[in-house]
Amino acid sequence: MREIVSTLARGLVRRPDRVHVRERHAHGRLVIELSVDPEDRGRVIGREGRTARALRTVLAAVAGKHDRSCQLEIVD
View 1 (cartoon, rainbow, N blue to C red):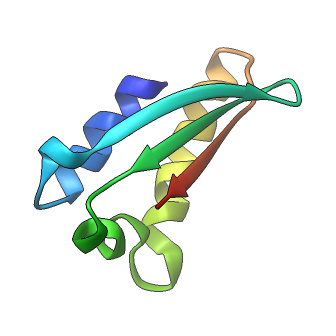
View 2 (cartoon, rainbow, N blue to C red):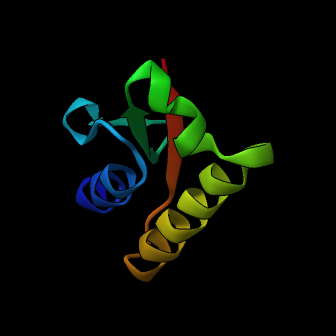
């Protein structure tokens, strides 16, 4: 899961070297924390959150194939 988010995020931003993805478990689900350069946050979130929603949709589809529950958080 981590690699999927990392690959997609690196393709969206101007500074791919500043993309960091961390996994943690909370309340029985996997939480993926995505951190990018402050100048690239808008690119990852997108207009009205459309890009972030698309990332979450892809992540949910992959997690569903593996019978897992997953959540994406974009952190500062």
